[in-house]
Image (cartoon, rainbow, N blue to C red; front, side, top):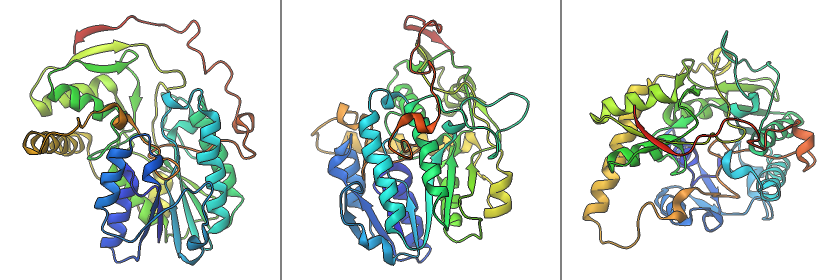
Length: 361
């Protein structure tokens, strides 16, 4: 089994879990191309499986042809960072994904994102056959990647919903919240905190991903991998405060262009085709992630002091041609317009804007 983006948040855990399950694993990544090469290199070096440093957009990918399954998790992550980075997204995600799909001979599992749906309604959860409404270059790229995947036999698309847990990328919400709360700083929140998400623990995501490598699934099928109970950011922060036994202070900032108001997963198809249901409740998952952060703090206090674990270098990463970790792929023909019209989603325009302020939640 080949795992691309194997030095990433999700990829490293998929690689380790696959090895524990008895698979012969080849981990593929390009840590030196990461946005946070220090963090990624450390995780890469810790992987106890055979590894190959390959840039998927340009390297010889013949090693993929001998694999029974390829789990393609590499890509450029992030809605916020996708604005203005269309060329890099095209190279690192579209071109690379097209090459992976062409090089592989067996099953390919392609990671996509809940962002392809845009904002979910309030009357029911989002189903895989619902219309797609990408609202950022990142989200549009995911739609395009799915189109590429549908053209190839024996390919499965997994739409991940707001993955969190130990090892989460430093630019992601719960990582930022936990680090701020443990340091006694205000928690940085984009928007008013009323956005809701189907937060899904990384261990549940790993289980669904491995199940997709062998399950009998129609070619090109898209499957939601998300918790069925959406939680607002405000409620998640309150829960974080209870786990930490603190009263969080919030630093409000303007919302991010293209960020969905609400995601809400319907995991019925995953249950039917993969035998998968999420098992980890948000309270337990947050406790798990906070324990990881505390462990890092203890390690930092006792380790020889070199450079900060929160160095700007470690604010996010590309990994293999970028780690996916809810990242995506741009345009079936390398053009954003082929992935769905963005309209004015790229501009805050007349949308509400609030000066940064601090409040207690």
